[in-house]
Image (tube, rainbow, N blue to C red):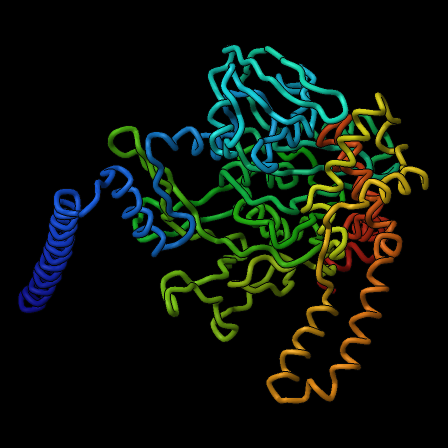
Length: 548
């Protein structure tokens, strides 16, 4: 027995010595490389031919180092801490409006309802000429953001030019801006409620719960709910748990995290009584649904609490933690991976084993099958796959061009400045005369674009030229190209319905803000129509969740 004890003790000592050597080696490597870096930095700072900015040099070095890890591990200088705080909390001091660059000036893009910009009657399309007496000409969006932000209660004076109206000066006070996680909730028909969730900053769970409670209170015929997570890039993990808790009873495991440091190994369960565990639920997701959105959608899928409709989600299964550093700097660092109730991790890209510096998607051969509570098969390593897949909805090339070239935006600006009021969003429809006015508005404006057919023809021409066939085929090529151009000139009429929809959304938002933009999109939203149809087909809905 003593002999065995000696062997065991010797093994423990060997492990301890090996661990000590390993820790010592790692410490030496860190110390050595920090010394090398300091030597390089010192030499550049002293000897480089031109003056260098020490802070900028270090920031570049840190950013490059962290970029080699993953896109989510980031360093924030003292000047950037306010931006980071906004990412985490959704709060900042300012006027409450988004802006966009237009040539040498910045214009108001979208005022937030109920905040200083909207209350002072700043409108989308207003060109900013001066801020507090300083010219705004040549300012970038970042420059202007710094000028517009400030402590709540501080005064700001803005000189603007309103198209079709002229110049005017407005003086008002900044306020604390807190963006809602739920910018809209309402009824898409008599029986179906809809909740749009765009972020996971503090109170996201409460906002979803309050929205559901108000829908139940104010709509006696409410039978089902659509939770829209499309385009929601995520946020706070605990708020994802709180959102799930809206529909899942107390005490259910929602997500667990595992990292290299055992302190990051945690489990997160629902803590409160659910708002409603029975109401039929559809969750909408797409390629822009990431992180916390995937915890919510994946957990509800794993627990068979709702049906997912849309496209495969982004595939971010990594968790970041905040670290405060010296001199009022901080960083966000990836500390763990998260696992939803089926124990799958939905992380899509492998940042540990990069190929030529690029993260590759996890190979199909390395993915595993998991099962929901009702034994429906699901996979890891590829984001969250919806139960009902729908085609990705994209604007046609002409509508994309009209949007990106600001022609729809500018027409909406003109419309708002010449029409004091419109009917409520659900009743608002542009007339054929309005559309003809839009066509007239586009005359002489550049919204050139290449169709997929034009791109294919160009590839054909390039290949034919390489193979010396072009001289024989050139006449046919030119004939096809000319015919295509003639047909393309009719695209604005051909895609009238789609263009009218984009116009109505933009114009409605000028009067009733983001809520109107969301509401105006319902008529042509394929996923919402699919969700409504499923929720009315109770047998199909139940069959999907039961896995039968």
